[in-house]
Image (cartoon, rainbow, N blue to C red; front, side, top):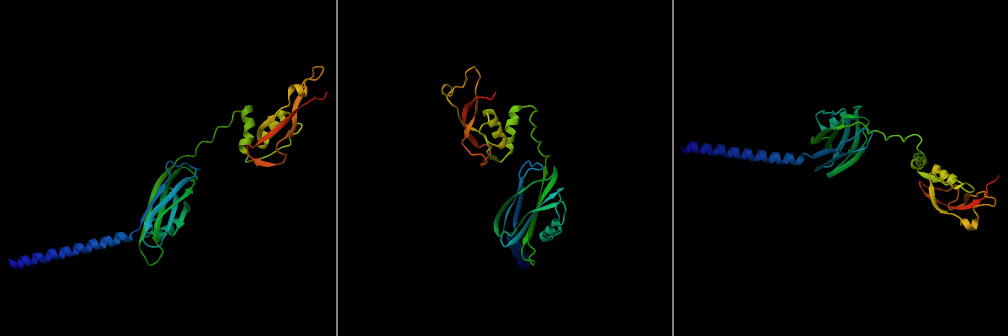
Amino acid sequence: MNRHLHRTRGLVGLAAALGTGTLLFGATDALAVDSLAVSASPSPQATVAMTIGARGSTSEPSKMRVFVARGGECANAGGASASAAAQSQRSDSVEVFSQDPSGAFSFVTQYTPPAAGNYAICAYLYRSSETSNVSSQVSQGFAVAAAPAPPPAPPAGDPGTERETPVAQTKHCVVPKLKNHTYEGARKLLHRSGCIVGNVAKPDKKKARPVRRGGKRRILKVASQGTPAGKVLKARARVSLRLKYVTPKS
């Protein structure tokens, strides 16, 4: 009976020792495996820039390569290094990251999907040393919706839209020559050039005698402009005007 008890105690001790060894090995292996996660901005649309992110940590200097694969499939050649090399050879794949992280890392970049369909982020993280077999690879699929509809064209014959369109489309304004133009003519020239009318100084009607003898009405024209002609300003810059009354020619 004592012999049987000693044998039982020996088996229990051996099992405990093996169990402790397995736990230690598992903890060491967990520390060696790097963490890696990827993300994509929600509700992406074709032809619209979206955000691609990669984050994680590594205990040693490593290499990270991240691709966007149109079609939703990522290469898996066994190890992360071989898989990344295989992914780079695919015609439907675009590399968006190539980094050498060490420790905690987080990277963000912009990617514009060319068309609607299924896509995937293919990320590969592996040691820079060729002798190390520690690696990690993850993938995340996402769907890209159709491109947003273009804005509707302005209705034909809308004079208000036609006046504002040249100003909205230009990035700068080249001040035109406005002297001796009527006020309405000067306003149109400014809009076509990308500027708008600023302060307007009009002459006193009584002192300037706007009505000529005989009842013929005089007209307002530009006597001078606050910004010289030819000067380049930012779009929608204001140009001040000084007007005068002029007798129209017969």
